[in-house]
Length: 183
Image 1 (cartoon, rainbow, N blue to C red):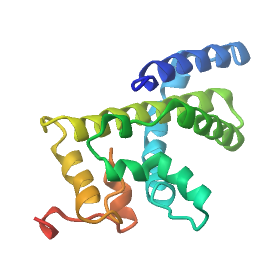
Image 2 (cartoon, rainbow, N blue to C red):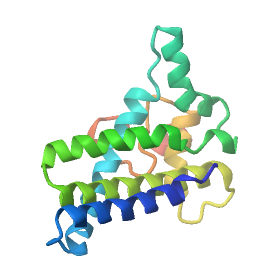
Image 3 (spheres, rainbow, N blue to C red):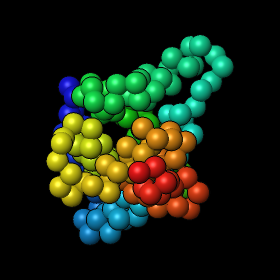
């Protein structure tokens, strides 16, 4: 089920709205929608943090190392293998539950949490689409910046360019690698 996220998360968003409406019936759909851009922005930070600090972590424990490599390091070994590009739902769903719980804990509000999480999921789906296209398509139509940055990460310096969907956090945290430094 390579593309399962593309139906799971839209369905989960509708489910969250339904649950949110049953809990806070006075809310409008616009109350959820207004939080989505903030969730997308939050996604860019989550994406950067996971990629930099978890996916490239090399723990001493062999069992933990196998667990981490199952997420991402195998992708670096086979960057064009379609089976190694997209995240698996069995990984992303528990992470989504954690994000949902943390977001609700921080906001204490069902509507805000729903909108933010829907934005995180929208950002994640955009990430999946970009990441898959960058690795499997010869076309750079609309993706040349993403491809250039991500390939610098893969083929020049894996300690740079962690943002796949946005270079913002690479600039903020000093992990951006200029194209001219490797061409």
